[in-house]
Length: 451
Image (tube, rainbow, N blue to C red; front, top):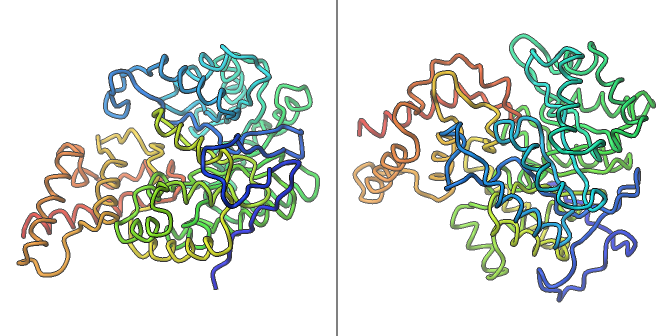
């Protein structure tokens, strides 16, 4: 039997009681209190991973494209004016430009009006030395134009590659070089207010981190996990190396460790559900956007401090602010509905790509996220060629798939150019067997072309 989400209690000190007849967006932002620091944090957090680009350009295709700083400033001004006060960035976001853009926009406001979260993103072996990791931390302070960080994360622990286990990689990044102990010293000096980690992958490493917390070896002020209604019970079906969000959340909650949520929309996939699922949602709430179901689910459990959303465009920001102003917690009956939707969703056999772009750039020029996005979209929209190849619907969907593939992904960047080097796979938080998926998609495309 599927585990259900633990519904948020109505604690009037932290979370206002929301009457059942409240209309989304007709009240004030919902806040949660961090018990470790007393921070009153907006439930909606601004993820600064995908920022607006000048002239609508695409930074993935054009590395010389420029961030639209004026739009970033405008969006952050709107967020602050509407109660959002948590901003999450990283040295590697937006090709290394996110911290700079975030710092420019936020520094125009009083420092005590917002909380900054950034990460020690020392993924590359070239950044594993103590000197390089310390330099990355110091540069984050410089780019963010601040002398302290409210929230600092060990970025994306749990990864592994062909040569190193997840524990060996964690040790190389944070233990052998003494960096974790150094970060604890920075916290004691007041340069870090809350120290935590973001997690993808190996359950054993996650359990070890919490064992250290229990033993008093290291104290985690917060932990960031991937959680949404699909990953709640089915993360390990979406990808065998993932850990169900219900387990991660429950282990943190019973220890009183505040939880920060990433990927509430599973990389946007829960906002683009197939038509038959959208129909079910619209029958229940005709005016409610499909994405709002996922955001409400992520914000409902007790102990969730922040739900992050990467809001590139103003319309995303306006919509998400409305969702959490105030939050309508998911009811028991709605939770049962979403668990049913999740089961239907995971049966679609999509690739669990969240378009984080950690796999990019590919040394052989493939546009990996775009390939997966086109394949997944055709599945979720019910437009995959299926059934009798002579049927009109099959021929129509076959043509749409192939034409759309060439339109979305230039031929020289398609799956048939993958040589199986697997350099991308160690960077993938979802542990996708990218080379195998490229081979599978290429074989499927060639099958359609032959027909």
